[in-house]
Length: 463
Image (cartoon, rainbow, N blue to C red; front, side, top):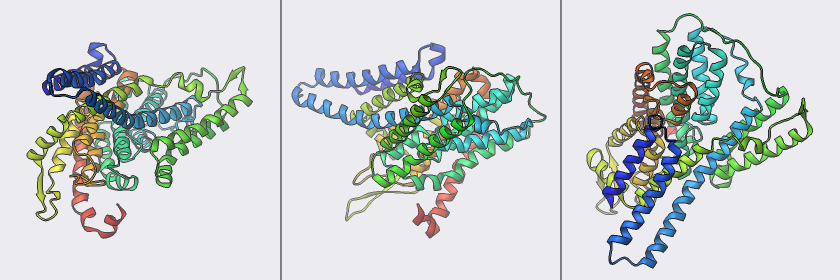
C-alpha cells in the first residue's frame, strides 16, 4: 500500500508542477489526487487485511475523513472569505487610492517603491492576491513587456517575503497559525527582519543593473467609474476586516475563519446598501454577490484537494515515517531519564527548514507545510511545541523558498499566468536573486534566534 500511495502522490505532484506543459489545470489534478489517495488507502486495507473488522474500519474512516475535512475546511473558508473581500475591494477600484500616488518613472526608485509596497501589502492581504494587484498596477506603469517582467519577478519575491512574516499573509502561515504552531506576535517579531533581508538583498543587487526611466503606457478608461468616496470606504473597511481577524481570534478564542466571515458579512451588508442607493449611468455598483461570481474558485478547490491528499498520508503513517528519517538524519534529541520527555538539542531543525524551503520551489509549499505539520503534531510530548523556533523558521523558508522558481508559489503561478512569463527566463533573471535573498534571510533568522531571542530577556518574554 505504501509504495502505491507514494507513487500516486508523486505522480500527482508532477502533474501539478507540469500544469502548463500538460495543459491540465492543477485543480483537477489536486482533486483527483485527494480522492485517489483516500480510496487507495481504504481499498488496500479492506482487500489485503483478512483480519480487518469492516464495521470498525468504516467507523474509523468516517471519523478520520470528518476530522481532516474539518481542519481543511477551516483553511478553505478562511481563504474564501479573504479572497472575496480583496476582490470586492478591486471591484470598487479601491486600490487606485494607492496606485494613483505612484508617479515616479525612474527604474531604481520604482523598484523600491513597488517592492516595499508589495512587501507590506502582502502582509495585510495575502501574497497571491497582492501579486495580482501589483501586476495590474505594473501594467499601468510600464509599457515594455520585458521590463515589466523584471519588476513582476521582484513582485513575486516581495509578495512571498511579505507574506512569510504575517499570520494572514501566506497560506502556509495561515495554516501554521490556525493549526496552533505559531501565535500572532511571535511570528511577526521573529521573522520580519529575516523577511526584510530576503527582499532588500535582491533589490540592492538588481538596483546596480537598472538605469534610466520606464515608459508609461497610454492611459485608457473603461467600465463603470466608482466615486472616490466609495473607493476609499470599501478599501478602509476591507483592510480593517482583514486586520481584525487576529484580534477576533485573540478576544474570542474562536477559529480565524469565523473572524474572516464576520468581516466579510459587514462589508457585504455595506456594499448592498451602497449598491441599492447609488447607480452610475444605469450601472449598479458591485456587491459581494457579483464578486462571488468571478472569485478564484479553482484556487480554493486546489487547496481542498491537495490538503486532503496530504491528510491521507498523515493518517496512513507515511508522514510519521518521513519524520523519523529526517530526525535520524538531522536532529539530535535528548530523552530525560526521569520524565521520559524527548527534547531537541542543537540546530538540526534549521537544516530541515532550509531543505523544505528549497523543495517548496519545486513543488507547492502548501502540501509541504501540511506534510510537516503532520510529521510533527502538537500535543503532549510534541517534539516542536507551539512557538518553537522551528515553526517560525519553517514559515520563513516555505514562504520565501517558493520564489526560487516561478512555479514554486501561488504568487509566482498567478504572475506567470497573467504576464505569460517564460519559465527559463525567470530561471535566468530572477532565480539567483531569489536564492541570494533566501539565504540572506535564513542567515539573519538563525543569527537573531541564536543571539537575541535566546539571550535578551525582554525579547524572550515578548515572544
